Image 1: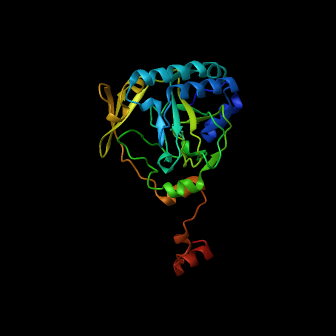
Image 2: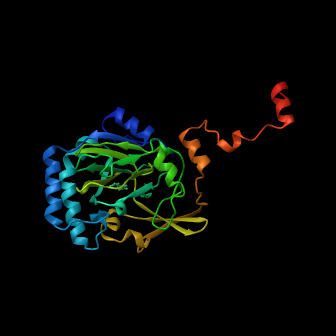
Image 3: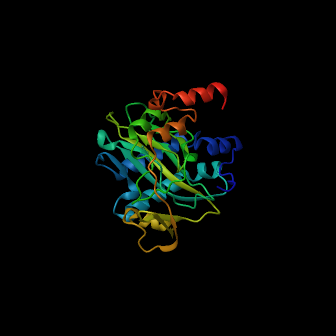
Length: 294
Ligand SMILES: O=C(O)CCC(=O)C(=O)O
């Protein structure tokens, strides 16, 4: 990856973001939080089940209405916090009661060329988070482990390791109005909401001002195809249906690796030794070599 332009005005936070893949910051005022919560419930009289995102409702006008309001309320804090950025769109995310709302560990899609740029989400809970309402969890540093391509038809490189990932994830007990600002490559997840209150959040995409949007697609078992994209495609289209109507830019070979448990443990702890290799006894020759340094 080429050297990254700062994206946060605060240099210390920008450094932390580069190293850890996320920062937690004060973001919205109490009044801004109340405004977002009121607007959501005015437009959602009926309780939503499981995980619900306004960005994915079929009614595009409704989607846009939610997007416009979130953008309007976020504008002050976005301007105060970020530099060299382009604001994309916003969505409410509501996690209702029950296991259906569990969001397994994942990385968000590539939406810019990650060889040169990073892309981000500002994720802001509109209620205080706790262990019972689907607190957000992250794997610090995981954004920098591996080059991956993530999209509608590409299997996540870590998707066979959910149990292991959950064990290593760190909960972030944000208060309402605080923001988790994270690199789209960071592994993150949120568990079940077992409380009676909807765990409401708002999420908002940010890309560097010099970057252009892309859509990544698995063309076949060994090939990634990259398409030119734009914010409107994400706001108005159905992004899960593939790169419909987008212009193909290039194709390249990629073998879509699935990370193994040992590889994962080594990412977390470079000194990790798998337990089965500890039980393998050295041969006589290996012992002699160790003894005499041969
Ligand atoms: O709302 C949540 O619990 C997590 C949202 C998330 O993972 C995402 O927007 O990628």
